Image 1 (spheres, rainbow, N blue to C red):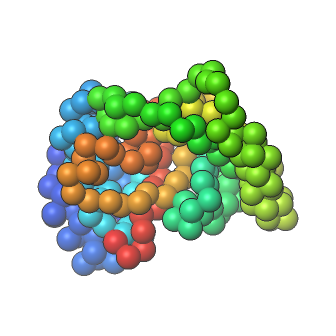
Image 2 (cartoon, rainbow, N blue to C red):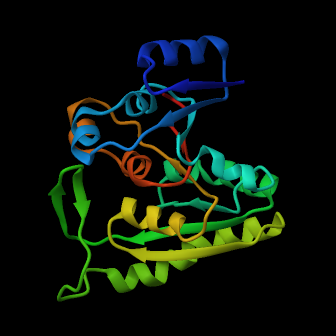
Amino acid sequence: MIINTEETGQTEVIVSEAQSEGVDLIAMATRRESALARGVLGSVTDRVLHSTSISILTLYSGEIHEFNRTSGGPKRVIVPPDGSTLSETAIQPAVEIAKAANAEIVFTEILRLPFFGVGVAGIEYGAGDYPGDYGIEVQKKEIPKYLQEFIDEAKMAGLNASASLRTGSPSQQIVEEASQIEDSIVVMGSHGAGGLKRWVVGSVADKVIRSAGQPVLVIPPTTG
């Protein structure tokens, strides 16, 4: 069962209804807002995301019609595992979506840089040329090995699978990867952290939802 709701709904009502009905997915239409407004104040979509263990599919109203030109599904599934157990929980759903839509699946990882700054949406990793190695060369060797296991499993399932290694802000790089091909979908986990730190700093999933021009399916922690 799917709950389809507008962003004007109340967080408590949406979460309560979803839990009482035992739904598998909450689908929410959302809209672009300034990074400051949503990064600090949050939105109903943000609050629902951090109040439930049910997966959430977010779409902008301007993009909902896009899949009507296709066979009913995405052409490309972007999944960004980062070595954490939480991020890897999104892999199986991403594979299932790719299989159902006969879509390509791309495992995207971002090099971790030791530089960051504070922006209007929270803390962001920096990018650019810096003196020293800071473990970047090690990452360039280890990340492809890490992703290869997922690629092999996806290919065994009959999928066209590949890896993409990027450098910079994780949220920005995920959005850019998804924007390369129309009719893409991002499937990712969310840490589900609450409180003031969450609203000021935000998570990668929050920022991807705010910035992506494609649907984003978020898999929250099963413990809620």
